[in-house]
Image 1 (cartoon, rainbow, N blue to C red):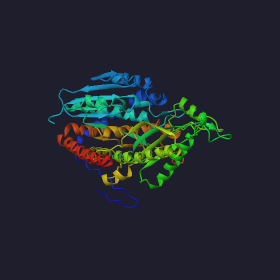
Image 2 (cartoon, rainbow, N blue to C red; image 1 turned 180 degrees about the vertical axis):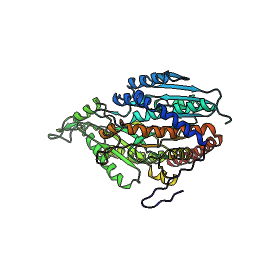
Image 3 (cartoon, rainbow, N blue to C red; image 1 turned 135 degrees about the horizontal axis):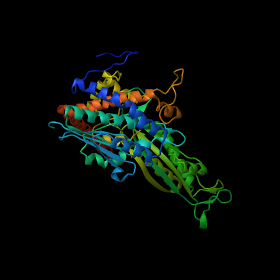
Image 4 (cartoon, one colour; image 1 turned 30 degrees about the vertical axis):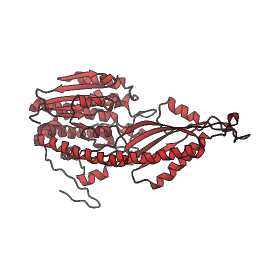
Amino acid sequence: MATVDDDFIMVDSTHVQGHPDHLTSISAYIDQVKCQLRTAISLPIHDNPELQYKEYLAHHILTDFMKQQQGWKVTPSAYEIDTAFVAVYDGSRKGPTVSFNAEYGKKQVGTIILGLCSNTGKDALVGIGHACGHNLIAVTSVAGALATAHMIDREKLSGKVVLFGTPAEGAYKDHNVDISLISHSGISPDAALVRTAAYSAMEVEYFGKEAHAAARPWDGIRHLHTINALDALITAYNAISVLRQQTESGDIIQGSHVPDSLHRKLCLTRVKGMIANGGARPNIIHAYSSGKFVVRSSSRARLEALKKRVYACFEAGALATGATLKLTPGGSYNDHMPNRTLAKSYRANFNRLGGTIPREDIDIISSATMASTDQGNISYAIPSISPNCWIRSEDETGKQLGGPHTPDFEKAARTEEAHELAMRVAKGLAATAVDILTTPTFLEEVRREFADMKRSHDFAMDAVVV
């Protein structure tokens, strides 16, 4: 094993799971189908971006392709979601269930379930397109699932592989999923132990009493005292700004307010931002104000603790001004907790393919991100990994260009090189799945680690409640 120095990274390439020939067979199979996968799936999805829950073309592309694959049973529009589907490849005996998520123990035999739901187009940003590489996420998962099915058929393996999109979380229980595999592309180095942030969005509204701001700002309607709803929001906003000084590293609070005209424009174009209504006109005491805020932290337990402090800021705005506060929770994600045992298999397989993911103690630190994903929710339900797939976003001189959610990355996600890199990740994921199917003790260790993790996080949540 190598050591680390200023200019060196320790790389762990030790393969301890499965049969050494499996990766070779998986790699050869994916090499046979990768061109077809690019032209039939990746490029059409990339070139026709669709917004969340409206990915009808992507749904058609994926279901039509999977229906043509021998041995696969495809259910379009699964779980009452128009753009979700589940595709199942069944072996002859029961065994573990391994899932691939495409965002759109005894002896083992195989059932592979491939479910690609409506997150396929989730990153299709207005005016940019697929700027997060979900075409690569989808095609990587398809390739991984197909390769696992190929190995089940070739080696007469047992097991079950499931690939679902997050809108159909109930599907995981329906199919008794044991693990969930997914990969996300980016400009950060390849990694196995990607950790993401816990996330919570909220809308805040204040209700006051209006008056003429110049003539009699102290008098409201029918001589009631005026209450400036905008003052309440600004007080809360300033309190949050002060709170930031006392938050820990990894705690993020985001919020802003913009003119109402921009508020309307943003809503119409479906851009998700932190938007506040500052009142109707500048010459009145404002009877209404609103804002949208996002809170992130490195873990679910820390997020809950931080939200209590943020909520106190909102309450302070109401208390100081007399305004009435209405707080409406929005969407939320748990942090992604990668399973180290799964990651060990993936790292070893990926590095055998030429990758350079560093050893565990470095990987777990260097791959942490404050981005958030619904895969985090899955990682609290079943063991999960979400490896990063580095792709090149550079100009002709090698200068670094934009990462996810930028026009630069939208272009990078379409290149042939990016597809090749995604296929390498698919090989590593499929090999990890086959390790689960061929090594009962491996799955036992994955489950043991997950149970220990759940106990420690439940304890942390209990401490927050107390």
